[in-house]
Length: 151
Image (cartoon, rainbow, N blue to C red; front, top):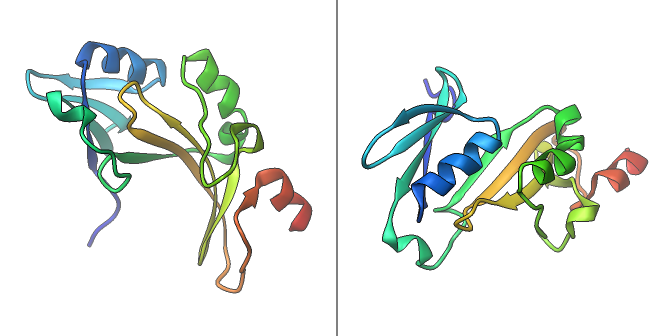
């Protein structure tokens, strides 16, 4: 029955600044309203809603303010420069500094590679791609470079 995520929502403090940020990430504006603005993640399949709110500066928790965007591996490997060209900066995640990224996450049974950055309001954003499905793989999180040499 459930096929995927259709929409996700994030609070933002300045809708105009956030619209510019997400357009720089090459997301297409789907709807701009008074209360919420939507961007297509995958046109006709999934979108991101941004809500301007004075409560954005309330305590952060990733279960409430985190979006992971699926990307292909080739794009993930070029993402650091791509993000920097758009004014976004990679951030430390799980003890790994950005220059060590992407990192490989052993989320059994699915292994992923990911990069992390924030939007202007500190919402956690992630670019992620699946690497393999293998229920028998058991390893610690590592850099993509280390993962390649240990495959």
